[in-house]
Image 1 (cartoon, rainbow, N blue to C red):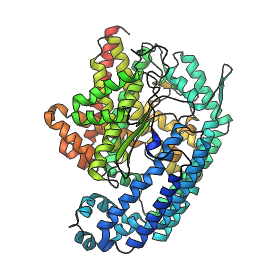
Image 2: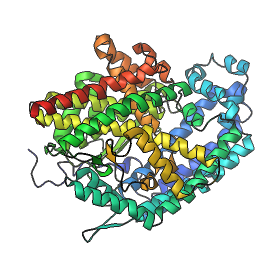
Image 3: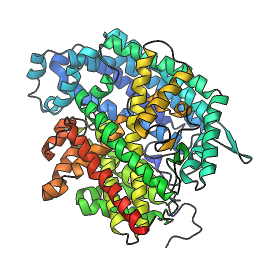
Image 4: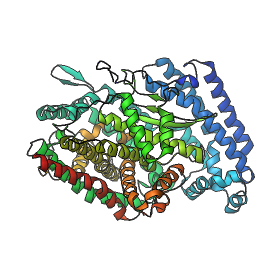
Length: 608
């Protein structure tokens, strides 16, 4: 039994052991490794530049060796600064190492992918008798197929060298300005995260509305909208210049190419979410208004908690046992990997929140020279949402470890849409387990409402963001945009998904909220990957009954594929075709449609 006084919910001692990497920020072994990596890169260039027509197999071996050693200092600094963002010595040493490695990579390694892409068909085919080359055929094919988008070697090298000083710097500046935002409520000063969290946990609708107005007005009064507009103009303009020079035909094409997905597939996803997803979403929010006893929802009510949400607390041990059992019941193979990640003796999980620790959660699989590991970061607070986050990140972990073993450093990492598949699958296994353990109808309703709310934020909200981005980029081609232009795009697109003003929501005090969405700066058009991964998984899971005992093996093969297959290739064994709009609609109906029906039925039965 977890002590009631345990503020870390039994997770206080669950921390990373980073001594496997180095003893500290100033460990001399770091400098030795960085120097060794730089020398390996220089040697690689001398040995293989201009020689890949006959030495591709050897080059692939050496390239992977560099990648594994390069991961060691990079991951050490990343995890260390995640654990303590205030460690100035660690940050200084990290910057020093990163600069040396970035320069060496630009000078010595840029040629490799460019030269592979430009080999003749005959030169590649002649080397396919080498098993090392044959294994990497999907990676080679992807490079060669997209060679038309590469610029001259000297230009690519110059762009790589300039990367640390480009638009990403504006993004970093906006993150710093985000962190500096302050809002005062009832005499208490809050940062942006604290203010937004009130919209999720506060039960008083008027207080939620007050906080939304504070944030919306504060984004303008603190000049955040001005700076965001100015820097977005630079970032979008730079991106458009780059894709035009490379010959891409539309703004999402570079991301689609990187994600191994056809334009038609992405269009089908967007169309299904804009129609069926948005329609069911509006139906859900009307149910939510009814349960909250509100005639019309304000935008500040969108993520409001249910008045009957369960207060159950899960200790760390209980959460681990529950999630591990959910994976184990589906697949002993996945169960063993989950147990390995969660084993405290390995030191792969950092669970409790700390003042100096980064917020959120992630899992980072890494192939090191000696082995493969998967490091998980959580901010565990004992709620059911924390259990689902644990299940989500463990999905990434088992995916990464299976793919790394099967594919190696160059091909293990699945593009983001497919990387999200395993995490969402893990969430679903755990959700089904939690639901099956409940007898109380009100608790079931609370679980369904929470799940649907999360689904809509993952699917409808992210495609909403994607449409906002497309509109921003189209408008930017006409000239620079003012903050008011971004606000207009934001409002018009939001209403297209969530209904006209007063239909479901009143849209007061939200016109400036685009200005805190950091991914508009950081990751162009990546957000559709969340919706893609969710519906990709739901469509696949809907085939479990039909496939029966075959399903587990097919799913494990999908995970092992890593980054070697695109959407069509991954779904073909399941008898599905993601190019078909029905694929995405089926994913919506097999999840959101069923959950919403059950929630409405339970609400009626309970007289709510």
